[in-house]
Image 1 (cartoon, rainbow, N blue to C red):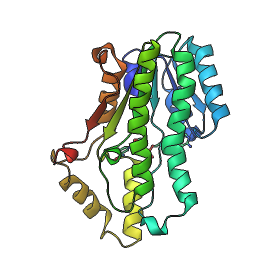
Image 2: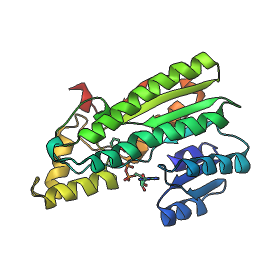
Image 3: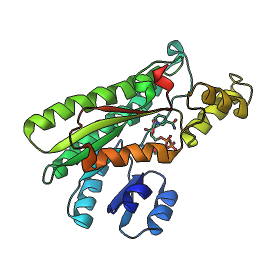
Amino acid sequence: MARLLHGEGANVMVTDILEDEGHALADEHENMIFMAHDVLQEDQWVAAIGATKEAYGGLHVLVNNAGIAHNATPLEETSLEQWRKVVGIDLDAVFLGCKHGVGLMKDSGGSIINISSIYGIVGSAGQAPYHAAKGGVRLLTKALAVELAQLGYGIRVNSVHPGFVGTDMVRDGLRQAVEAGLMPGENEAIEMLTMQTPIGRLGVPRDIANAVLFLASEESAWMTGAELVVDGGFTAQ
Ligand SMILES: NC(=O)c1ccc[n+]([C@@H]2O[C@H](COP(=O)([O-])OP(=O)(O)OC[C@H]3O[C@@H](n4cnc5c(N)ncnc54)[C@H](O)[C@@H]3O)[C@@H](O)[C@H]2O)c1
């Protein structure tokens, strides 16, 4: 997402807890800055938004993308601590991002893009905290879209709902499922996810980044509170 938006001319502030990877990415590009940032820490949101204002003078697009998966566990065996960890990063942090992003974005107007999931629309076994958080992101997005439109800030808010994309999150999840004996092997697991995806392949990050670019652009000027599903047909079934 950072590379694509940068390629389209955006000045980009990348934040993550992965400092080495973040610095390596930013070092490859002019007008791309990396800042270490734990999305659960409100003071670090204040610092990141402040640094963006200082570096670039404003904020026009905010993508709330950080997220973690939940190791497949039945609800009865899920601890409150596990629940809070997933809901904290996958939902509370999106609230913090929206809250502090709006503070700067209302000077100019802009577009907030919250990364939810197909799992924010449909359910599956063993993933209740993740579904609850991603479903929460879907309606947080709609509520804020209406509120900001009424306030006349010129800020649109939309959610993106990716299907199965071959990132670290999916690979780590499958590895854990194989180790726990829930799946025969990683290749078989990938094949299973692919078979559940009508288009016949897993998504790649660029598939999701293209949707983000569209929602960031004026081409989506009349869209707010929308949920853009990018899932190779998974939820069409
Ligand atoms: N991969 C998929 O199939 C898929 C499907 C639907 C939705 N999503 C969502 O897409 C988003 C990106 O996921 P991904 O697949 O690229 O996974 P990923 O694990 O590759 O990337 C997630 C990123 O979030 C960062 N992160 C985690 N906790 C953080 C914290 N406390 N503060 C700051 N950064 C933190 C990680 O360091 C990592 O860089 C997530 O919100 C995820 O839920 C992914």
